Length: 201
Image (cartoon, rainbow, N blue to C red; front, side, top):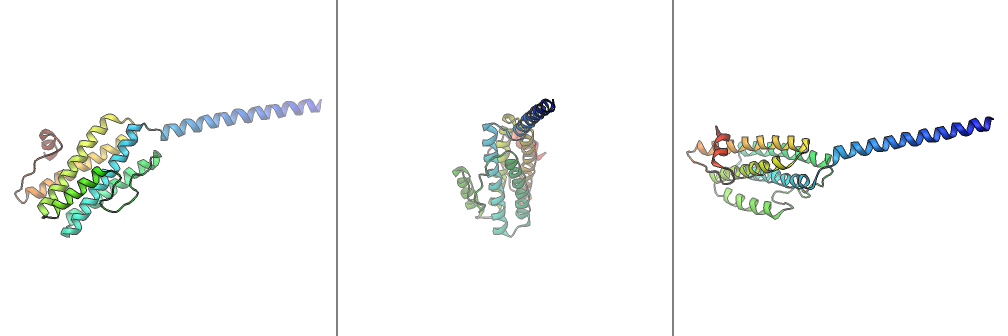
């Protein structure tokens, strides 16, 4: 009789353990997928925008050194903060960081290498050209973020891109104001005139 009760107890214990582990595994898998799963488009956008934030930081940092400029150094610090935040998103979504080398001008994509070379070459000519180059990079960020904000659905990514766009608009306005103070006009190359005017006003 005792053996019968013991067997029943052991069977119940095994059954309870199996059910508990199943529920735990299901809950863990559900949570893991909810936190970390993003689609390929969102992954590509993160990789792209990480490099573009690095481009903005690299350029401002180089111009800050070139002209011993507090203005450019402040922008570079702000862009470093933006870069750190998007890298946090990369980590939380299990996406490999495309920035393997943090040296200025080094990127996974040749697109950013070419832009960096072109704009630093012109920016090195004089400070006014440097302001124009910074404005163009801010424009590129706004254009790309507008595109990605319509295609991504992950809330964390969307919130990050919204903040990045706000900061890029602020940078564009700052660069254009620097030129305006010298009586130099700036005409948008990558966003519409209407969007450009809305940002300035």
